[in-house]
Structure formats: C-alpha cells, structure tokens
Length: 270
Image (tube, rainbow, N blue to C red; front, side, top):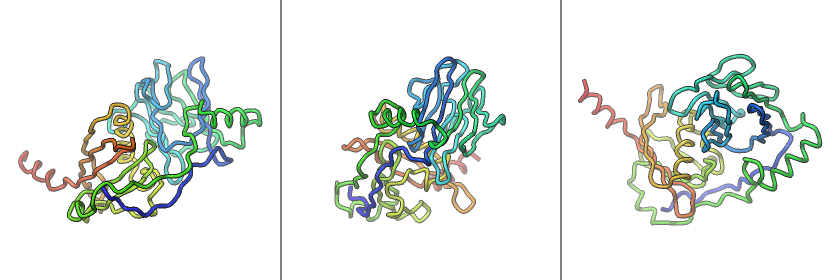
C-alpha cells in the first residue's frame, strides 16, 4: 500500500521541565509515573497501562489522553460504562477534565494521586526518574530516534477510486502514514499530522475508542472492527473502523463512511 510519503521527523523528547509526573498512592503501594505517552488506560485489570490493585478500583476505571492543551482524564471505559466509584479531581466528581500541576485525583477511598510538574520535585527524585526513564524500568515510552514512513506496499492506483481513509499508526497512536480516500465526508489528513498522536487531530471520544482497539490488536492480533461516529457539520458521521497489524508490527486503520447504510437500517426498523 503506497501511502502518502511526505513526512516530518518527530523525535520523542526525554524528561523535561514541562513534563507532568503522576504520583499515585494505591493502598500501601506508591507509584511514580512520568506522563510521556499518548494514552494511558487506568484500572485494576492486569492489561491496564497504569494498574491499580485496590478492589475499589474498577477493571477499566479511567483513561488519560494527550491533547493539544494537555492531558485529559476521562472516567470509565471508552465506549462503555463509567467506573464504579468515579473520578474526583480536587474534590469534585468529573467525567472528563484537563489536569494540571497540583491537581489531586481520587479513584476510590484508598487510591489517590497528585499531578506534579518536573520542576517541583527534588533533585534526588529527578535523578531517580531519569535513571528509570532511560533504563526502561518505568511504564513509559522509551525515546526513539524518529518516525519512519511506510514503504511502498502496492501501486497507488489500487486506491485511486477507494472511498476509505487509510492510516498507519504505531503502538502509541502516532500517525506514520496515510492515504486519503475520495469520500468528501471523511476527514482529510495532511503532512502536518504526521508524527502526531491521533488525539491531537481526531475528537477525544473517537480517539479513545481507537486507542482501546489499538491496544487489543497489539495484544491479541487479528482484525478488530467496530462502529463509531465523528461530528460532521453538527451531525454524526457514522463510520466503520477496521484495525489490523502490518508486517512491521505497526497498525493499519481503515475508516469507512457508513452513513448511507445506517440510514437504510433506520428506515427498515421504522
């Protein structure tokens, strides 16, 4: 598949003064998480990116997603139910909220966290964090040299009349390559989006669903498909998404407009 070959190099940054640190108290256990990834799932299940063991924490309690204006915490499972005990930020129950340094987050009675910025922690803590960051001991992303665009896999004329949007992402949901379809209702991507997390240019709820399925494909392989919607001129644009692993272990996502199909389904049900 010959996707758009324009690209920019976006190396990952090491720990820096603008980075947030999430300090967690999970019952008797303490955790320190440098927030450096595009997405984190939080919960009691062992597959969560940030696993909390206390029984008051739901199996899929919340998500953290990196947006253009910072990290947003969202209660519950993407496309599913809210957590049993909710998410409290600074004493208030929230469904979603952009977090900042100094915010206090409570997941249940004995599980809480505090957001710190890198400058606010001690020099000793900074040295410990940097050592863990570069040795790969923490659950965070290891710096990489660059993003590599997709090699030619097929002649582009195979897609000259294709309506679907094809995108290729890495495990963190960063856009590596794309091929816009000829469906005018679907989003159109440009070289400016390359190297950026999908949450920086797709709506939050749409991105959360994508991240959830990206993780599942990474773990279980195979083809995952689901239906969701995108806001389009004040109305929902219903889409079918298919996600599968490429030969280089990155993932291909095919986005198809199914508005017409949904309309026909509704008419047959009326």
